[in-house]
Length: 443
Image 1 (cartoon, one colour):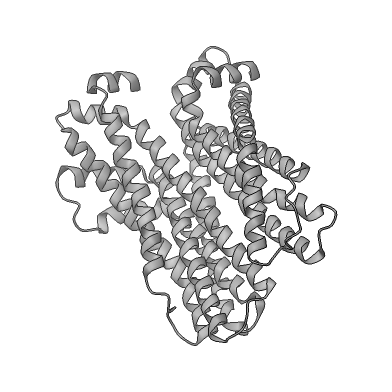
Image 2 (image 1 turned 30 degrees about the horizontal axis):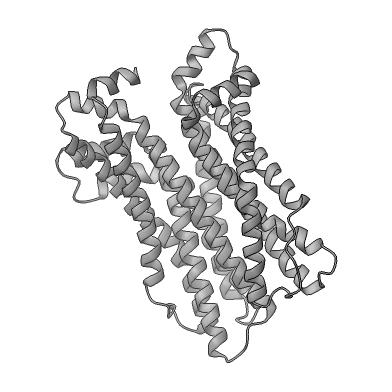
């Protein structure tokens, strides 16, 4: 099966492009910050500089590992679902589920290793640039030279490969459960609901804990920030059930496009939720963290105090974590939407054979993308605001931050462009295929 996996990757490399991109970007980020461990352990590094680099590399490495896993998992889940016909053919020719699982896992490992190898060069350059930023901010001494060694390479290859193998294994198991009967599907839905409710409860507790912390406490920012993240995760976990009820409550779903778009989202809420989940996490986490850091920085300036090394470390961590979340959330969003829309080429062909024009098909995709975007904006903004307001009240005695809505509009613009743009461009590409050919190719 490993031989078959290698041949599958060589014969159809385009099918694994999204996974390769996820592995490449993830490895670049992980190895870039992993090089800080090598630099911190090098001879001649003073304790203050070593602590700054070690803390940053450890925190970002943890976030990066989780985000790499989720990015690859979302991509592989869609890819495995699209290969249902191929997997069924392998089953009919005598392949066992274990053999098919090994094939998919082998493919993912090959692609992940390829992406990591390609990422070594950019990671070396990124490590040098990152160390230069630390020197410019005074967090690292000027005499320290960059080192790219075993910690960076080990973390890059290890995390990317483990994430790809684990995500592929879970994707194959999820595909097997989809045909295992209603009982298992119901159990999966109950677990998702319980997990979502638990995340909402934990996020609410974290946000409310902010009011019990002194305004000068160093850990004040942690409670609302992590509370907003958990609220975003909770809303994202419950998004399949929320999305099925949103179209009926929204005005403006008129005409053929509006009717078909709302019908699709009600009947395929779980598939559409694969796009909605990274959007909610992106909006909620980015909005909360950027505003909280903005309020903290403005408060430090207002008091006339200079930022300490600890303040600069915390600011760097917040901005870097937000940057990583932005990159991978957008990557997950674009990959999931691209794969899901490409998979519907046969559906678009049937609509056209039934009398729909290409403009009406694009209208359906636009309606769906609009509903998903509006739902993500509302839920993500609720999670972000839930973390911003308590921190602002405790830190500044004001209810709203003084930074204005500019940051929020920027975050919204990125989400809208990524969702609507990717959906419409992918649909236009699918519509270039003749309707009869698209239907025949999906059979």
